[in-house]
Amino acid sequence: MSQEDARKMVKKATKLLQPSMLALRMKPDWDAAAPLFEEAARIFLRYRAFKDAQYSFERASEGQQRLGSELHAVKHLESAAECASKDKRHEDACNLYKAAYETFASIGKVAMGAAALSRGAKLLADEGKTDLVKSLYELALEAIEDEGGVDSSSAGSLVITSQDLFGAYTKLLVESKLLQDAARNELRYAAFVSSLSSFNGSRSLCRAYLQAIVLNLVAGNGQEALATWNDCFEVEDFMSSKTASCAQDLLDACRTGDYKHFMECVTSGGVLYELDNGIARLLKKVSQATFDEIGRGVGAQTLTVDQLGSQGAAEGEEEDLC
Image (cartoon, rainbow, N blue to C red):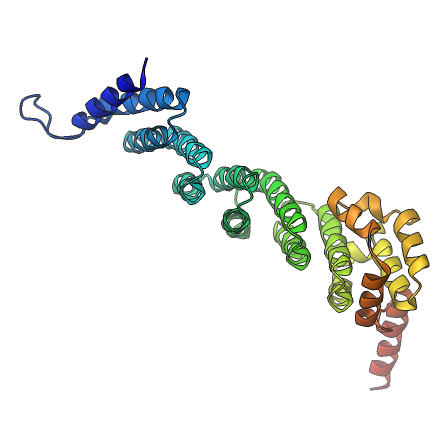
């Protein structure tokens, strides 16, 4: 079939949505119109007429929603978004993925909606549209955080979706050289994992804290790395883990000001095996200048696990004296 045939289908479908005394039609006939829009969209797509295909997919999606088939509606919305992206209308694509999420959310499928946003983010990331990608990830993360807060029956799918979302968002931020934003995203993931009482996420939690510390180090922000480390003292699962030892070794090396020792900790201390590949590569490339900047932020304030224990014992003795 030709594009002209597709246009005739769209015209016919549009007429079916209008009241007609002659045809004894008092309301839109979506049962007949939706398949015509769908077929027209496929024909337009075959001819790479992306704008016409997008319009037809959107009308087909509207039809499926009116017919109570939200899952089919979402499929058409995502197809419309792909057409918009191929036609370099990236904001349209972003808005269509958001509409797909809202459709999923309207039927209680929040995790599936977040996954749709993730697909949109990855598609637009390939086009270099960082701001739009960030808006999709932020909406997706807010959605699963809200859903996780009620500890719903979909906790299992939320965990899987969250791992993909937070990981992909961190990767994007790292590639965009927004390292401290990436560190904050890792801390956000740790908080999310902690909120899921039905999920034992200690390994994910530990990895997130370590990556947050390392990302701040790589960014040259020793003070923020130290603040994150000190906050972690409240998290027993982390402080008793191998990842805490890795973080402590790095911070202690920064405190001594010995760049050679720091790089030895990086290459032989096992920390690289605990990190995502992109973060590990950045850690291996920390320069002397960045290390010196880290050292100024860390200073001599870092407390090791042993020092923390001694400090706690001293505080206990003071309380006894009171």
